[in-house]
Image (cartoon, rainbow, N blue to C red; front, side, top):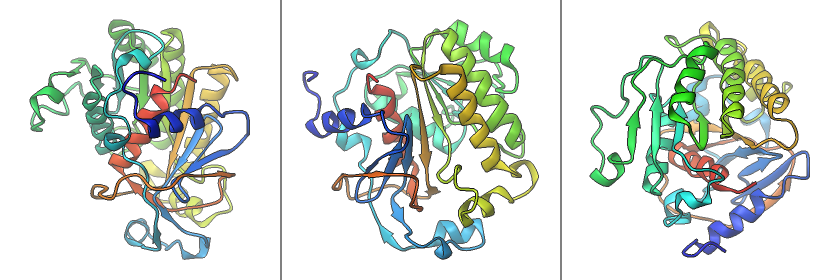
Amino acid sequence: MTPGLDFKLYILILLLHLTASDSFSLLPRGTVLFDRTHHVLRQQQHDDDEVSSTRRALLQSSTSYLLFLTATSFYPTISSAAMMKEGPIVVIGAGGRTGMEVTKELSKLGLTVVTTTRTGKDPFQIVKLKEDIQSRISNYPNPTSVTSIDSIRDALTSIKPAGVIYCASASKQGGTSFQVDDEGVGNVAQIAKEQKARFILISALAVDRPESKSFQITNTIGGNFNQIMDAKMSGENRVRKIFGKSGDYAIVRPGVLMSGKSFQGPQGIEINQGDMIGGGLSRDELAGVVVGALLSDK
């Protein structure tokens, strides 16, 4: 065991290593599934009919709360020695709320982080962080568009990252679902592989359950978000094709991302099979899972 590594994190990493099954779930009483694909949620819904017909209602619905383990209480002392190569961690789409949470979580663990955005603007320029956390975060100053493989190649070749975390998704300003969640994912995965960097993709729960209401509602939002679940599934498949079975990547499928922070800390862990549950979690909880996947040596 790595000196100073929290025992609960050690258990988490051991479970993250179990990638033999097609769909493996690691759940704090109902929370994470994966095959290199980690399904993450905090709020469980046993009956798909309980999923309401609007995105706002989905966010506000409350069935039984199942708390996911937070990164700060799970692994406070990990160093970059856990990574397979030297270098910073690049966060793609760092200007969004999820990207910012992931960036902060990485820095809290003492890792060097480089943020990238489609505009080149520093997402933390006007955000006050503790000095020690801020000191480990820098911003790549050039606009970095996931829709341009040359743009991604220029950025990652310059930064030489040990890991790349993909937090970008479709937006009104940034591009459509198929541009960002499908083609963009493939562009970044391809260059990450060329750079021998570990690649972590944040996707979405239920992307392989097109018959579910959560899939159908989310997939028909319209505008730049239209068919976003189809695009995310296609993006996942691009990653699997690019890296192959022995590739250094993980796909994290969170449930609905809810506002606010988690407060109650780690709960009991269950292991389950299949993408069979629904619900949500907070972005800081998701950040903890993403960092756990990054730091696993599998």
